[in-house]
Length: 515
Image 1 (cartoon, one colour):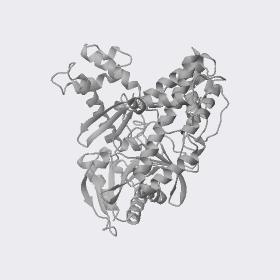
Image 2: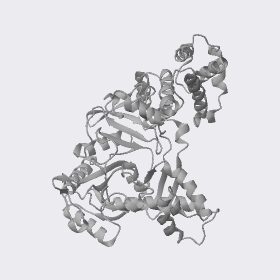
Image 3: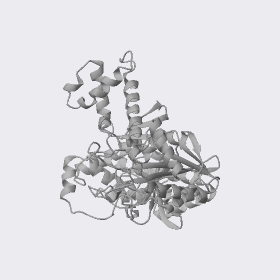
Image 4: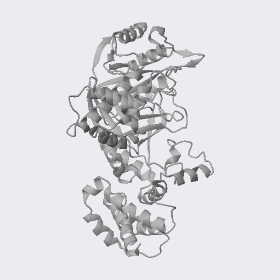
């Protein structure tokens, strides 16, 4: 690669940092030299004036969609690979290197925290708006990858469900997988949520985080941190995590922490995954919540029938019209809501109803828990309590209240907090399978003769009966809508009380037991 090209792109990355406010004018020369050092170069055709001129000329659209930074990083990483600075140009290697470059241009934690606190004093929304933009500009949130995710909305009887096929997590190449397997195993950081990730250089089996900055928050008199998810499944998708590496647990303190966060950030909802395997999140070993600035279908779903718990007449209580089993509590006093939530949690932990196939425990193993979500709506506090049960059987070894086998061709993974609220996070394989499925249906090919598509054959046969015709004019909409309906069935499978007269009668039995 011509030295003029690498020099130009070193200027470009520093210009990007200057344009987006990551560095000041006084930092330009220092930044040029520090980036230069990463390439083992000692000379540069580029000046402070060149950086400022380039910064002024960058198309704002390319900053907003991340393509300016993406294009610049491709050149820098290619040069690094060509000159044996990194071992290849697959994401496993380039992600470690380009994050290192961005880390050089990212302000120190104390500066970021100071800026956030200053804006927070003016308005919490100003603070989170700035921090979200900052997290995108540092490339911690890789905008150009998020843009590749496939997203659509499917109307259902429960509202509009959000469907996304996640493409923003790059798959590692076999060489990197083998290298990671052969590398010395490390226990630092203990997990990807630990505060020790801030500034960490990463490994082949652990993402680099030099450009990662976290915000300290005090929740229920304990030390926590606030950050955004690098994968942004929805607007301002944030993670709130304990400063200590301690397991997740749903208890009284959980409800207190959720509302304490909502009081500090009233424009955000926040919720916790359940604390048992199968119905819990992917990281049960580190206590954390997820939140954000987004209204999910579940939050919009109405209460379809109300009930009153003796002693809590001041709290509005009801069952939500939703495929999963949700109790909604609302009121002006969070202490009262929390007290009722404690009562419901304690009751549910020990509740069994053989007729509804709900067992609190089998052979000493507990099965009942709750996924809680807190928010503020129209000046009142709300707490949704989603009843969960993780019992397994020979017929349903992955979980009775888990996507059943006939739905695994679309969704087999656990149903965590995000899915509970109405957003499907579907595997990347579906993008190519949808294309192949479209082609096969339009050309009348036998799906059962295709090794990849045969798992979809029964499903296609079934939904095809519902359409007068499926052709090029409607095939894309049909496939998307039918995948969305599968997700609705997934949520119905995960519901402990089914949307049948018998199921809802059983739900009422539990509610009645609270008095």
